[in-house]
Every structure is written in C-alpha cells, then in structure tokens.
Image 1 (tube, rainbow, N blue to C red):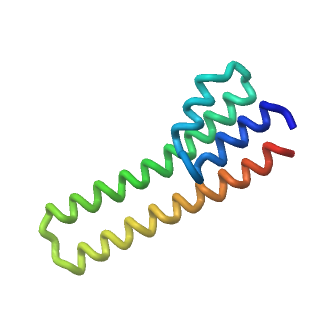
Image 2 (tube, rainbow, N blue to C red; image 1 turned 60 degrees about the vertical axis):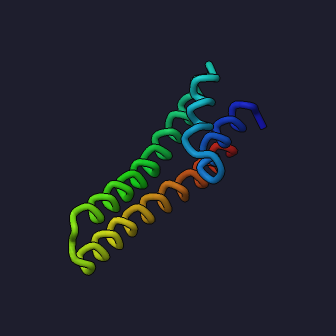
Image 3 (tube, helix red, strand yellow; image 1 turned 30 degrees about the vertical axis):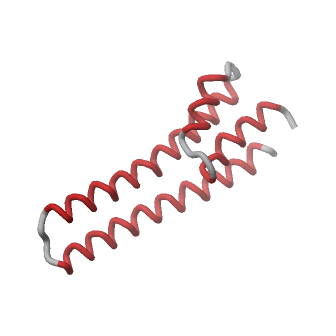
Length: 104
C-alpha cells in the first residue's frame, strides 16, 4: 500500500468522523496530483452533503418565522428532511465505495 492510496482513502473515509476538514487539509498539504484529485473529489462530495444540511436549517427557520399552519410546516420539514437524508446517504455510500476503490 502506498502513501498516496492511504491519503486518498483517508480523504474519502473522513466523512464518517471529520467531514470537510480532512480533505481540505490533504488537498493543500500534498503536492501529488493523484492525492489532490481524490481529496478534491472527496471535498466536493462532502460539501454537497453539508450544503443539504444548510438547506434543512434554512427551511427550518423559514417555516418557524413564516407562521404557517402545523400541517404545512410538518410537510415542509418532513420533505426537506427526506431530501437531506437521501443526499447524505448517497454521499456517504459513494465515499465508502471510493475508499474501497482507491485501495484496488
């Protein structure tokens, strides 16, 4: 196993314990293009997951401030939560698959 593979896999698998920060540090700390490529891909995927969480937070505060009825608020929150959960699950599965593929 090479250090390049280890750092690339570490960038992807960091979604489980320290998302966004590890790929960012690996991207700027490494000069190797292979590692930087995978760190950038991991960073993009984790940014998508964090952006969807931000979408949920914005929807939550808008629904609180808009004085909507309980049913509309519940439906809006459930729909947004479902979207965020699906995006996060997809990015997590993709990151784990990429971690395995980098070691091949």
